[in-house]
Length: 201
Image (tube, rainbow, N blue to C red):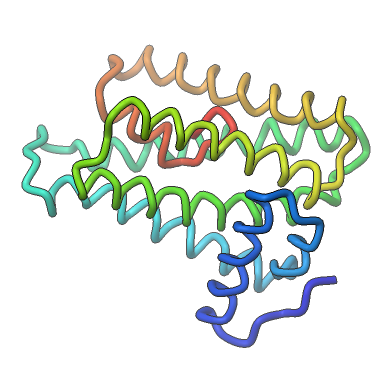
């Protein structure tokens, strides 16, 4: 059982190490995360901070956007994230591993935090070419697979089921959203910032 961190800063530092461990496939990765309810709450705080940081960064950069774009983007993130959690819980329940939901959320929220901050900083630095996008996509896939493998401890076939279910959930959510709001640039930004890992979010 991971040791609980006493402060949010300690939790953030440990989670950063955990995410690096996930990236390289280190089996010690679970030991860096706090899977208690306090740890879950802390991971959601990190997720919200990353989402808000991503939402306001265009304004900081002076990028003009239609009124309501930020609010719309935040709503899209919330819908995609809910779909990701819902379909993840559905699969875990079907395979009798619902106990893995909280550890998954903790690790995934922190991974989303660091990946979103990193990708936003790349955008601010003007590094947003196709190579950077592909590299980030590969990074997300690796982290998501290792979360399912090392944090939730699923075997190969169940990992595939888990990730495919998330992809299906996010795809359905995007389709339903498109019926209400025509596809727009912020839709893609929301999908990536939600981490919606593995589909991207």
